[in-house]
Length: 260
Image 1 (cartoon, rainbow, N blue to C red):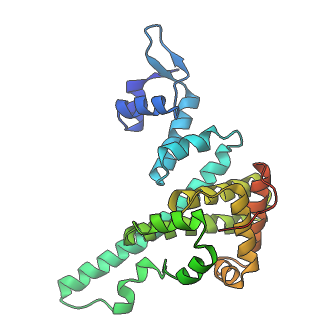
Image 2 (cartoon, rainbow, N blue to C red):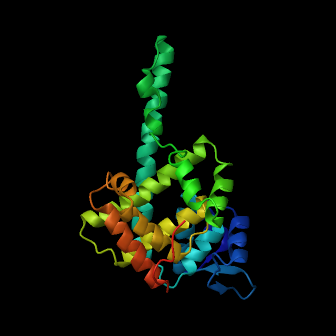
């Protein structure tokens, strides 16, 4: 049975205005209209709305969500698996932060101090400035590097934490596929490769499929990349390279013409 816009708004706990906005963007257009011209939403529309809200909760911009859902190769099952992995990683990180807050509160109430090593444990050891000078020497004249530098200059500590969190979650999801024996050329692996490419586009620089394929080659050719990536799971760098290449071919991109 079709639902009206007000019924869907109550069900999804969002505003009618938001649903109208999604319609205008082409993000979620109702399948039908009543004789009076009112929007009517089907079960398939509700399923699409759920995807919109999942991606939105994970921080994806609306335009990016629209592109993802409009992709003819979009796989709902693979998307749900990826979303679950990303949300699980976020939940783990939030649990660690809650524990850190509780520890700080307990120390404050007792009049003691938190151990300096434990104080920032929840934030990890990500350092965005690492290899900065070398990156500038290798790619400083490229538009990708210049765009990445412009964006990075605006990021604050909480932005870098989020960037690390999202990147780690994508690599963990890839590692899970590798553990399960899933082929790098599978739909699931290629969808995650595409998610990683879009992640780079969201946070750093527009990354064409050919460039993304070249980045995968770099993950294997440069031992520092390989060593760091394979800390997540042995052999992950090779799996990423092959998944990036398969995804590039799926989108009609040939051999890499270079990376950033």
